Length: 172
Image 1 (cartoon, rainbow, N blue to C red):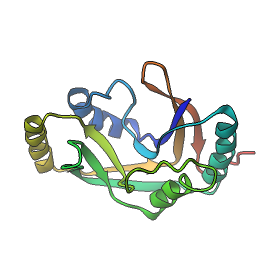
Image 2: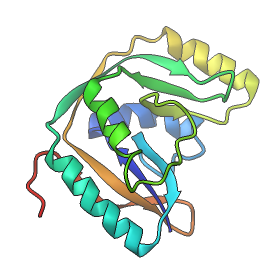
Image 3: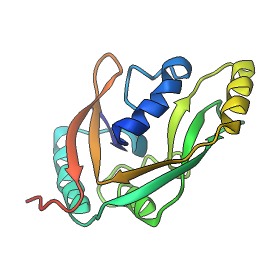
Image 4: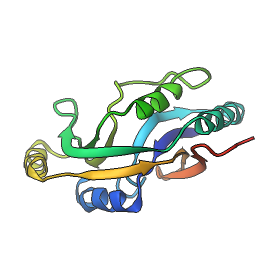
């Protein structure tokens, strides 16, 4: 089965992202707005059970933290993806790095750029118009992060929560 690990922002941030995603993101219906901590990976039942134990340890050791998104950015020219740029925080980087060590599959394809996608797979002309319009817009978003989610992919390509891990909760 295919799994991934993400952080879902609050409803307010999701609503802001979705105001663009419903028009500019073909993955809109497949997964809510999120910050990807671990790209999709294949795992059998034994591996996922081992990883859940590790994810509980990681969550136990984390304290909530605040993230800030102060601008819209892009991955162009690699892809025509537009996103809310999440300002780097050591807690976020540490969380990401812990999910790429130990028993976790080594599937890191790109450097970690914390972000929430708001548009992707746009034709070049539309991408240019949308990015130039959004990059002029003042963006000031803040969110409190206190959990992350292990997701799994359904047969129709959509993603659903397998388990949520709350920071500082005493998992056994």
